[in-house]
Amino acid sequence: VLVQFRHRIASFTHDVLLQHGEHVIVEGDRGVDLGKVIEARPMGPADLRRNFALIVRIATVEEASHWEHTIPSLEQQAAVDCQEILNKHGGGDMRVVQAEYQFDMNKLTFYFTSKESHPNFSTVLAECFSRWHCRIWFARYHSKDDKSREGKWAQSRRQTVPEAMTPSTPPPPKPPSSLSSSCSSITSLGKQ
Image (cartoon, rainbow, N blue to C red; front, side, top):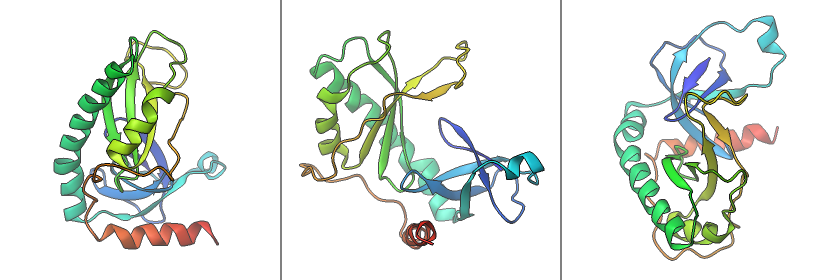
């Protein structure tokens, strides 16, 4: 099953056939994420050898609405705020193109452009963490003309801020409460 997120596409496995356009809750990076099914087909022999993450369940209407209407405005503001932080700390030619929250709001990825091959984010990570209270990642944005092997979106120097840091501002609103049961089931699945 191919799932479209706001700024990326990923493959997942599920034991029932899903419909094109359905919103689904999937295993995310240390949590859960929400996306929309763009291709649902039976898995072939080659697919069985690959290690796909799992689709946990179909998203509720409330969760899909939160993903489509609430989170995008938070992401737009986060992109603007991150650019201001970069400018304040001398971020060079780095420009934040987009921001993307993982659905459970535990991870925020900033997609950026830069002429530097390996920009240094260490000067801004602490302030970003204290502002958004989640793991912060920076991923390089590649234009449609870029022929890199990783495609349009590529991870770049995955850096996070230590979780022990004390935040100074309140975190953004969490997704609807029905998600908490999914989070615990994913945690228990990983320990089996």
